[in-house]
Length: 122
Image 1 (cartoon, helix red, strand yellow):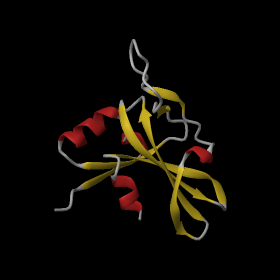
Image 2 (cartoon, rainbow, N blue to C red):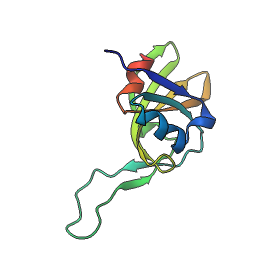
Image 3 (cartoon, one colour):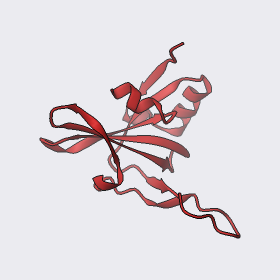
Image 4 (cartoon, helix red, strand yellow):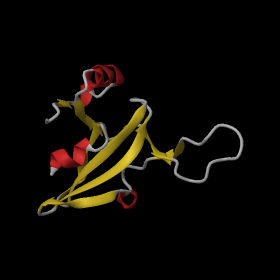
């Protein structure tokens, strides 16, 4: 059975809208602003005492080296992905970055659940 996917524009990629759609058990794909507040997920050794680390620094959207190259969709159009924590959405999201070598500004997309976005683009 195929799940229904909902696509949200920039203005609707907010926590209220995302919570409503996920309550209905729908997959969400949205577009993010270029200045979205995202954090790397901490993957290091846990501390022996105290609260566990959740974040490992702010995501620099201009640094392509931290992302995983998924492949080339078309000539000069590359797809990079990264699992990050969104502070405004208060959850893990899959960040996808479409990089066009002719236009270096690129586009940022997010998905919930995490596995949805790369399957949808390819």
